[in-house]
Every structure is written in C-alpha cells, then in structure tokens.
Amino acid sequence: MMHVVYLFDIDGTLLHAHGSGRAAFDAVFVEQHGIPDASTGIRYGGKTDHQIIDEIFVARMGRRATAGERAAFIAAYLPKLHALLVEHPVEVLAGVHDALTYLAARPEVVLGIATGNVKEGAYAKLGAAQLERWFSFGGYGCDSHVRAELVAKAAERAKHERDVREVIVVGDTIHDIAAARAVGATVCAVATGSDPRDALAHADVVFESLIELPAWHAARFG
Ligand SMILES: [Mg+2]
Image (tube, rainbow, N blue to C red; front, side, top):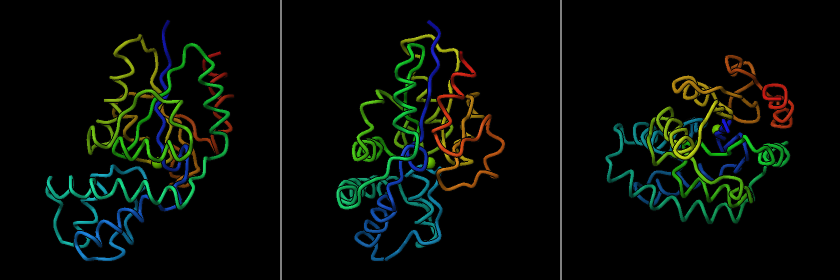
C-alpha cells in the first residue's frame, strides 16, 4: 500500500499550552543568568527550541548560546515545563480529536509529529493534552535546529518501513510552510496559532481550524 504521511506541528496546531513554554524558558533564564522576562518581544511560533534560546541570548547577552549553554538550558527547562503543564492545563484545539480519529481509521494514513520542541518537551505537551497515543514517530527540535531538517527527518522515519506517496505537513506558521516546501511536502496551514490566515495563504490549503481537515482529506484521496 502507498501511504499518506501526516506530520503535525504541536503548538498552535494541535494545542495551546497557554504560555507554559515561554514561562519555562523565562524561568530558566532568571535561574541561569539573572535576567527576568528574557523572552519579552521574541516570537516563538514556528521556531525550534534551539533557535529560541539563541534569540534570547542575542537579545539579552549580545551573543548566541554555546552548545554547552543550550544543553544546560534544555536540561533546566524540561522539569519546569512539566510542572507548568500540570499547573496550567493545555487546550486541545477545535477539530483535533475528530481529525485524528478520522485519519487514524484510514489504512493508508500514517500520523507523525514535526515540531521545533525537543522530543521530551514535545511529548510533555502531547501527554498533557492526552494526544500522545496517536503518534509513534516524528521529527523534533533535538534532531535539528533547522525546521526543514527536522521535517525531513520525520519524513525519513516515516519512509523507513513503508512506501509513501505523499507527505503532508500540518502547521500554524509561515515557518511550517517554508519547511514543508523545502522538503517537497504538501502543506496544510491552520489559522489557530500565531500567524494570521492572510500570512498563510501560500500553503496548499488554509483551514480556519482542523474541523476542516477530514473533508479536505476525503476530497483529495477519496
Ligand atoms: Mg506551531
């Protein structure tokens, strides 16, 4: 069978963590560098954890983080993220449960993740949303700090054990679209995240929410 692989972004696409990621990043920066509200003014949407750390370092320290500083940052970030996700429940976005249920029931469909979160952070968020059971593989911010490369890694993992006719990236930002284009994937943008619908118009399709995804899949694949 020729499979259709969906690669879902997490933040703004499947769920909103309502600032838990940003709060965890800021808490680490206070702890390690004594600077509060370090990520004020920095946009997180569509970026990898590594890119966000570098942007905070450049904004507050005037230089990028070293590899050692990034590793120490992530090590301190993960327990803070876990704690914040318990305190502040995540919101699963409209249509997500139905879209995943619909897609998972189709024998040709394979469901994966493509996110800038490091893998443990990704599964902390998916677990908080009780969505982790849908996904068995992915590409993550720890695979590459370049989004196109982690999307390519996810696609490579999907193709490892099966024939694939099409890879479809589902994401909420221009960065998801650019990464999908770079690897030759189809891209469904969804206007539930940080970029407005107008900014996403160069995707193959733009949804108001994932409520629209099952009908789009049915029209495209029969
Ligand atoms: Mg996103």
